[in-house]
Image (cartoon, rainbow, N blue to C red; front, side):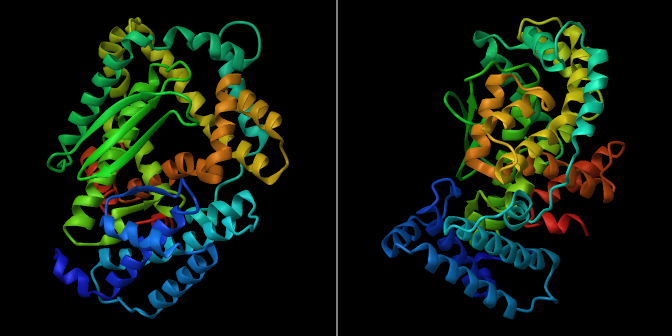
Amino acid sequence: MTTSKNESTIHPLHEIAESYVKLVLAVGEHDADYVDAYYGPPEWQDQVKAMAATPDSIRSSSQLLLEKLGEIKIASEEEIVQLRHRYLVQQIRSMGARMDMLLGRTFSFDEEALALYDAKPPVFQESFFQEVLQHLEQLIPGMGTVTERYERYRQPFAVPVDRLDNVFQAAIQECRERTQRTIGLPENERFTLEYVTNKPWSGYNWYKGNNFSLIQINTDLPIFIDRAVDLAAHEGYPGHHLYNSLLETNLARRRGWVEFMVYALFSPQSLIAEGTANFGIEVAFPGNERVDFERFVLFPLAGMNGAEAEHYYSIHKLTAVLNYAHNEAARGYLDGTMNRQQAEEWLITYALLSPERAKQRVRFIDAYRSYVINYNLGQDLVRTYIESRGGTAKNRVKRWEEFGKLISSPRLPSGLKG
């Protein structure tokens, strides 16, 4: 069933949704990173600026909205409306926690992750990463630490600057074609690609509305060949660009659900956004298809020997297991059990980052704090959810179907577990 915009405006959730949007914009007046995207009525922005709400008043208003939501009973509604109700509850709870942080409350890493992103991050002991490094030692030849050997090994796989755009454009085209085969892309969807510097992240999707994104790739550090497909899929298809486009098309425009005209970055929605963007790489390139595509297309475009692709990705697959080392660095750094230097050293040792990349990653933690859980934990939660519904690697049609449903819905982290 499709709800028209006129019907949506008389639904009891609509007034709360509009108030939620304005509160998100109000938080953005105090937290420059909070509003990741907005394409609602410009006059709402003007109203919010004129109101000049204080953090205390925003916090109080968010609590009042939660009380109103608690009074609304929608048990008989279709599932997606029930999901909408839960979405608003969790997003507003998260907003309250973010305001508490701005007002001076201190959260531990785990408390913050749960309060903002509706998920409890797992803890990995140092021994877990040490065991993975032992396997890598056998695969990467040479002298020195595993990190030093890994860095030397992959230097030849850095994409030359003059070939970078050709490699990215080919990766984007392939990701788009693979996505379009199974998920109908919204009309006039498109994005612009820019190369930037001096950022704490490697890539970013700035969604502008009307199915348009600005995607930026950070070129501060060398970009290795595996990042082409990673970033093309994660930021573009079937990642952030498609996710935002489908939410706009199916929920904001078709149903008139105004809460999807704004994206609060430090909120549960981000775990779904980052988790689906990362898992989407596997959905688009199941089995050995990624290695085959890169061997015959991207490696030659980058001036590399395609015969090296299989070995490169056997090592890359193992290093990906170390991804949770980023969380442990963030946990220690934010909880005060690691200083900046110790966090960088941890990332160098257990995430196999070069010193320059470790510094960039700690800059990211400075800016985005516990947001790091959304990439790895988000990916794992999304994978488990989709596979539990039959979307396994052996059933590609069902996997794409469940993936498409997820990125077109208001389902959030706690909803992935049931």
